[in-house]
Amino acid sequence: MNILFFGPNGSGKGTQGAILKDKYQIAHIESGGIFRDNIKNGTELGKKAKTFIDKGDLVPDDITIPMILDRLQADDCKKGWLLDGFPRNKNQAVMLHDALKKAGLSLDIVIEIVLDREIAKNRIMGRRLCANDNNHPNNIFIDAIKPNGDKCRVCGGALSARNDDQDETAIDKRHSIYYNTENGTLASAYYFKSLAEKDNSIRYLTLDGKASVKEVAAELVSKL
Image (cartoon, rainbow, N blue to C red; front, side, top):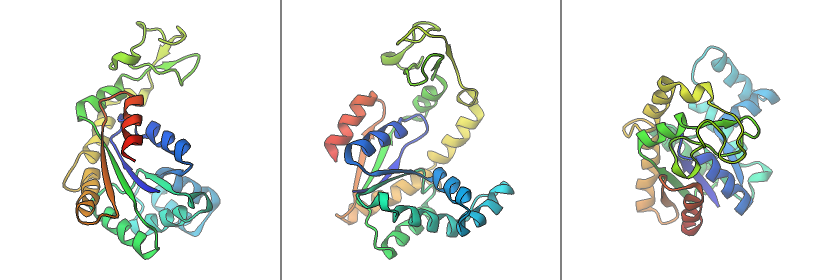
C-alpha cells in the first residue's frame, strides 16, 4: 500500500501517519527527513542539495525527486510507504507521478485531511506543552483536550507554548502555500484527485479534520 498524505499544519497529519505506520507496518517518510539523511550521509544528491540549502534557495525538483525515489525504493518500503510533505505544487505532482511510473512504483491511495484554515491556525496556536511530559495532549482551542487553566489536564504540570506555535506570520505563510489551489499544495492534491476520477488504480480519500484524533483515525481505517 503506497500512500500520499496531504493536510495543513495543525490537521494532525503526522499523528495519523504514525498510526498508519504502526497498523500497516509501512514506512512513514517525511520529505524533510530525506534531505537531512542525504546531506548527513554525504550522498551525491545530498551534496548537490546542500549547495542550494546553504544559499537559502529551494532545492530544484530534478534533485529532490530522485532523492525521493531512492527513498521509496529502500528495503523498509517493500511493504509500502506513506509520503508526507511532498509534492507542494502542481508541477511537482506531475513530475512525481511521471517519475513513479517510470520507476515502476504504484501510487495506490491519496489521502487529504480537510480542515478549515482558521481552525488549523487555532489548533497550532492553542497547543500547550506539559513540563512533565510533552506527549500529554493540551490545546486551549480543542474542548476534548482543553487544559485546566494553566495546568496540564493529565498530570497538573505547568504548561508553556512553543515560540514557533505563536508566530502568526510564519503560520500564515505556511498555510498560504498549502491552501493555494492554483499553484500551492492543494493544487498538487487536486491533480491526483483528477487522476483518481479517471484511473481506478488510484483512490482519493478525504477525512474530516475537525473530528478528534481517534475519530479521524477510525474514519481513515474504515475507508482503507
